[in-house]
Length: 488
Figure: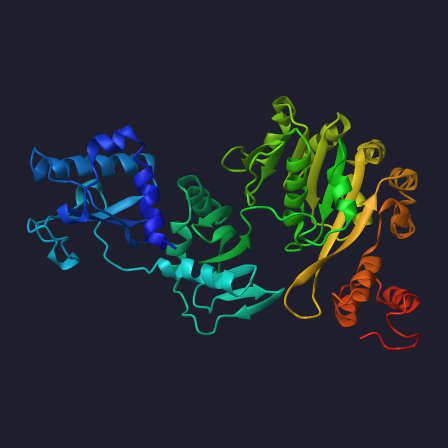
């Protein structure tokens, strides 16, 4: 797998914009010449870019250096995050590639451009090495902050990497900035926090949140698959597939952060992609799973790159002739209202909320709107909602992973009436418990099924249960535990 500086070198090289780059610099064999470019963001990352170029063209080495300066100036003009601090040019006429210490033929510092020489060294490869370690350990998240041991989350538990070095504040900032594009970097320095995606060739994609804490940078990086798993791969019930096959209406996935909502959504989009000829538009922050067109054509729009915000994308999405719309998160009134409108006008809308169960999900959507509109919103929601998938992750009995436990709401007459009437909304859980015929289940019913199959332990089921007493009674009825036996 390429080191970080190699992937960054390739990125800067590609930013030469084709013909313009090729006209100024021609790549040659390493034995014929070498240029080392020292680059930094606000601090320093030394040796990120190292490529062999022909700097001694027919016009002489001076002209070649002039072309290099023009190319670097062009890069800096268009890539504001790239600050060239120093440059060394050397050739070895004996036909051997010059070593670094032999680069004395010409040493040019670009102080004339307002950049002071800076020679500190930051080992940028540490970041990719830790991400590789995260994947090898089967972890989901990597946490890095200044003067602290890096930590990884494995099967839901956060564990320190005690053998890894601690990073200084400067090193942590350097690593964070090395992953950011110019607009992301500008946003980060202005708002002191930012979300973005990061890819490591040969390893995968990561969802990154960089932020400041105690005046230094910290990062939380989540490993995501570059391709979506199927519904069956994730162990999800058939009801999830049926909801993905709806032609119109609103389907919501809810749960706390880190419960797998994005993964489940990606599996549903993957099912649509392979079974339905339609146009899918996704609005995500950031794009995590990459979908390749099959029967469906899928346009993936990333907030901050392809659109300014969820709300701005939703304002125009209906003009893009979509059949299916995925909204990464409903964060504000405008986005919720647009999603309801799209669902009412014949589109299938998939989205997420950070709520813990179906009842709270209904109340959260209604509470987005002012009181004088809430009765009408209840009627609209009752007519458009197709299902709610509430998700939690529970450690498996063998301790090697986690499995999803679900509360599934599927719309029917009783559910619609409970949504319309605020007094009956609290009865939704009871309606779900009685709705097995429609594919509905409560969290406790889902947990009981997992315990009966031996997938999770009774102890973990009790810790995750909505009502441990009701779960114990349910397990007794199914003969999983004996009556009067302590469920632990």
